[in-house]
Length: 396
Image 1 (spheres, rainbow, N blue to C red):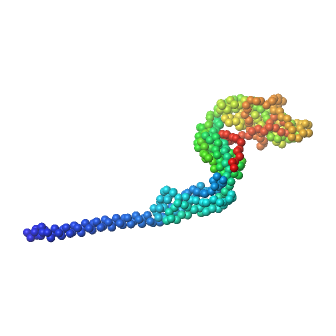
Image 2: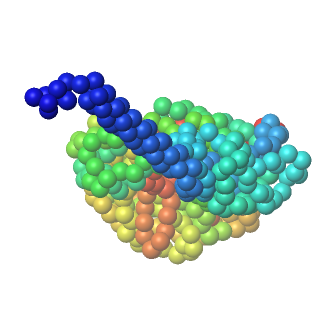
């Protein structure tokens, strides 16, 4: 009875209330301390130094209207060291620059220091390389046609390529004035797979090359072109007359006549290509020929769309005679051309023809009966060009 009265007394209620208050106080403070500890850990993590490496394109300051700068790397490496949060932000946004000031420098080769701009003062930055060598030149600019090139040997047998084309008729090239003058052509090289049988269409990076095929350090705008190389089944045949023509310089004081028993050849190719051919011109080289001789000449048409010539070789007799008129007058020449019959001559035809590339003992092109010289034939090529025009002069 007394125990029950004790639990119902005010003292007991006060004691229970006190215990609950102490418990709540301890609980709230423990949560607060835990929160402060987490916040402290986050702050420590953000303030901890970290490292990151980023690639950036150098931004050069110079008179762009007057000068052209070459030798600048496309990208340089930038190492950043600093608080994790700041480095991460710089890495994600990339809102800083690698700069170099070329203002006031004259044309020539210079070694310049690279610096960073736009970074927090708490971040330490270092570029690799720290210096670059550049060449400052007077600026030149000109427009050039785009030439599409490909390796015709990659095309499957009994197939032929049509006229390659590009969606860029011409492009603007900017660079050092001296380099602009060296440009022979702007090319779009198309890499064909082996034994290709289908037309090829793709985007190709353009290159400016000199007469030796070396790529020049210039800027082309636009820098790519969409090119198309049409490829067709070339299984049609056509029989055409054969015409021998002289090629190269003969021996002074000599007159040449050609003859062969082969009067006609059969061409294989696309229908469109065969429609444009009425005869096959076969060049015969005269270089060093000072006496009668017989040659075996290989027949290969250089006309686009023609894949084969039958027969593949012909026998040609070269008749050499001394000519009194040409021996007394050096440099003059009279030329007549022969058909496949040895003594039959005729004037050059105005009809369309296909030039053949002859090969015998390393000899190349040639032309009919001549006195020490003759018209040059055209040699075969494994590349096709989409357009051509006179090379422009660079703008000042």
